[in-house]
Image 1 (cartoon, one colour):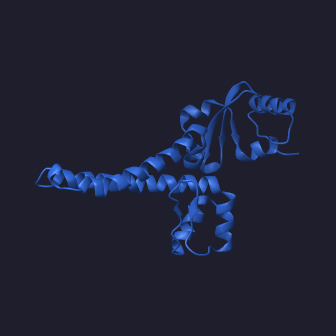
Image 2: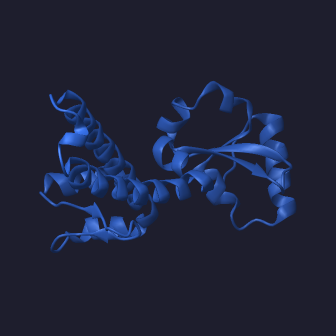
Length: 185
């Protein structure tokens, strides 16, 4: 079950799954159905990213609404005591936490994997850049510039994970020469 499907099912069941204040844990109200709990545990990192990304959008929307409220007032904002302190500071503090969480995913390349279903990696073993796609949807949505690099589906990477370095280099050479795919066995 995809992370989006898991989170959508949780919402449909009325469960409010949120990112904890520290940005590193998940707050879950009550007891989760077993399949949702297992899916969250199996995909913890991706769930954390999606929750942070979603909440970041919500916080930015709220901040923009507050900005408009301040700008639309008749009296100057400085004449409205406490408006900034009450409204902006907690949102800015939360935004800082969310940005820190998301930045970690951006730096590692996982953000594009979680958002788009693909990641570009420079392989020192192969001495070139390759693109790994999660599924057919990600492959269809892959930007043209990324298509110039050798492409591996996630299943192909799984098939190569227990191979030694010479076997990986041979498989890559065959894949490039014959525009084929890698299979286990």
